[in-house]
Structures are given as C-alpha cells and as structure tokens.
Image 1 (cartoon, rainbow, N blue to C red):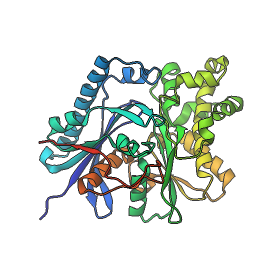
Image 2 (cartoon, rainbow, N blue to C red):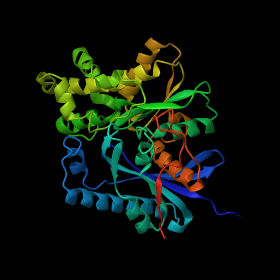
Image 3 (cartoon, rainbow, N blue to C red):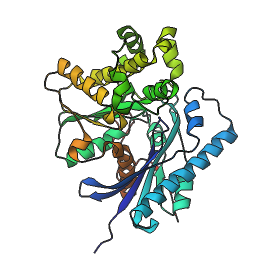
Image 4 (cartoon, rainbow, N blue to C red):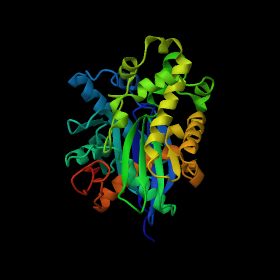
Length: 368
C-alpha cells in the first residue's frame, strides 16, 4: 500500500490573532481536512502596532522573523503529534507567513516567519514567499485564495459561485465556466471591527456580531468611508492593514464617531457588507463565505438582506454548509500551494493579480 501524502498549511492573518495550522490529505481533485489547530502568535501586540506605523529597526525585524518562524514550526509539530503522526509522514509544509507590509505599487510584499526556520526545526520541506513570486512577474501578489477557491468549488461540483473570504481583509473570487478566474480584495473585513472591540469593549472581537446588531449603522459615516477611491478602483487590486487602519479611519470620520463606539462598530460592520455586496453585484451567483467573518451573524444577515435587495436570487451560505470548516480554508490554501509547487504544477494568476504568465508559485527550503 502506498503511503498517504499529507501536507500542512500555515497561515497568520492580518488580525494577528494566532497561527492557523491545517493538516490535509489530497484525494483525487480535492483535499480532505484531517485536522486544524490555532497556535498563539508571539509579539501580537507589537505586530498590531506595526499596522499603524511601519517604522521598525533591523534588529526588531530580524527578531520577529526568527520568533515567528519558531512559532510556525511549533504549530506544525503540535498538529503532527496531535494526530499521532511523525514529521516524516508530511510531504511538505506551505507557509504564508505573517504579512508585515504589502505594497503592490512597489512590487513588494513582506511576510515574516522565515520558511528556512520552519523547514529546519521540523525537518520538513517548506514552501513560502508566494506573494513575492507573483509580484516578480508584475502581479499584485494578492489575493492568492481564488486558486484554491476554484479547486474547492469544483471538488464540490459547483461550477459557478462567488467565494468570499472575510479575514482581517475581505476578498472575493468569481468562479464561472463563462470567463477566466477573477478575484480581488474588497477592503476591510474584520480588522477594524476587532480593533474597536479591543479598544472599547474589552473583547477580542464582536462575538456573532451582537454588539453591532444593537444599533443601526450611521449612514453619514458609512458614506464618508465608502468615498475612499480604493472602493471604486477596478481590479486587479489588493490591500492590507498598512492602508485600512486606525489612521485611515480617523482621517475619514469626524471626532464624534469615537464618542459612539457601538455605532462606529456597527458602521464598520456595514462597510464590510457594502463593499462585498458591491463586488458581487456584477454576476448573479451563489455567495459562499469562509474566514472568521462567517461567524459574525449580523454581518451575514446584513449581507443576505443587501443582496436580496440587489438581486433577488442571491443566496448566502458558508463553507460549513458543505462540511468544510470556514476557519480552515486559508490554511488549506497554503497546503494546496505547497502541493502544487511540490508537484511542479504552474498556477495561473494572470486574470486575478495581473501577473504576466502562469508560474510555479513559491520557493522551497529543504527540511533535511
């Protein structure tokens, strides 16, 4: 009997709320999620502070590279042992790293948690630097998710749908047999809401959207936020916390917004809803949500209501409706990227990021 191939995907989102590690087993054209765990992200407060100011010393940067690399490696090892496997059972790891700075206008994106450290600590070949590889060919470097969204949908015999990932930022993928794969970042997902919760409500996030549900959004504030030119910019486009952060928010809104934090939170919830709805309004297809935002009931209900007004046949589901943990999709993406690189398969991001041609995405650091 052939030994099964297992892959591990490691992801830390812009919310800096932890490392997601996913263990997957490829089967035919799909990937079976074997297990998932969350692991604490070191220097989380420091990383969140860097969302507001990109000033960092070389010593601090080097320390973050090493410490996050060690944490990613330990997350992978914990997941392996949790499932009574050994590092030798894992074919490869795919690690996205933690995004510190994303600058498509410069053709550069910086992820930390170096793959070399992960490879050497675990003894497992590790693939990483996926974004920079795309940017070297003129792409935006993000979003990468549409590639896996397409594979995941096809494995569930879905030929046309919008996949919406709501993490720190939100991105959409359009999969349809009628045109090339498309995808782009719509703007803030959970990140700004999470920061308001942490600053004013002594909680990490708005559990199920209960705080946002208690008051109506401020339509004047919402219009001021939506006036940002990013939202009307055509794709390909990508963004991050270095753009949509507290400094941006304070520049857009009047001072009195911070005197009503609950209404501000509700307005930010509506901002995520409106920008996603604006993106998926072009083609009437089912909308399937993944990421942490899938657990925000207020956000999902508002999106359902908004889309019902725009296009009466829109449906909103989550990947949980298809027996896939919504919090695992990004980790599974990283495992899938590692598998594709290990197989030597070129992936085509030309219609998503604007890169020049299909490519083998990511570099490899040997574990042995």
